[in-house]
Image (cartoon, rainbow, N blue to C red; front, side, top):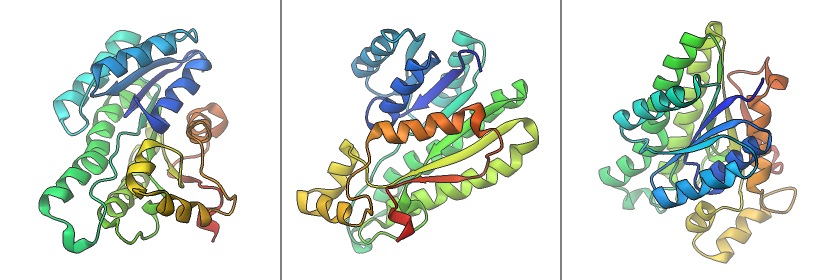
Length: 248
């Protein structure tokens, strides 16, 4: 694909940022979305230093008007939308189920689940008109296994995987591929917040057969692969990038 147009939500840190850099280095046109203007503009400028055409658009994935505008502005700027990476997410409130409330549920699911649904609604709208496109949703190894103390996060990522597979079936004949990437423990700010203390992070690493945390770039490489023509016969798939964790 000649200079594809890429849209990434939650692009200002961690895996989303690494994916933006990876696509930019390949010459793609990249739109990065998030809620922090200064960081977003700085990232877009960095992507341009790699020779990419890049723009930042402020968007909150919990708000449909923001997502509609995000997709429409991307198309207005670059003429089409080839790849959407729905990466925006939150770890939510970590703790036992007895500590959870309707508010902590909404805070987690509005971003992790509703955000993916609304993003895909508008991405698919545009891609169906083109007759082509690729969507990649970011899940987690907790999207297909349990996690004591992270019931809301795990539940939200289970939902992401079910939605990913279902939409893949809906749009398969429209020329649109829909897949997911499920990171294992990855060296990001979210993991540090999630684990809280070094001992908890070390315990996660101990469960990884390769014996270390994943790097954001390694996740980005998997995202770039699924977006590429080399993955043209892959849809409805969740790719584990977890150092062998789910092989245990």
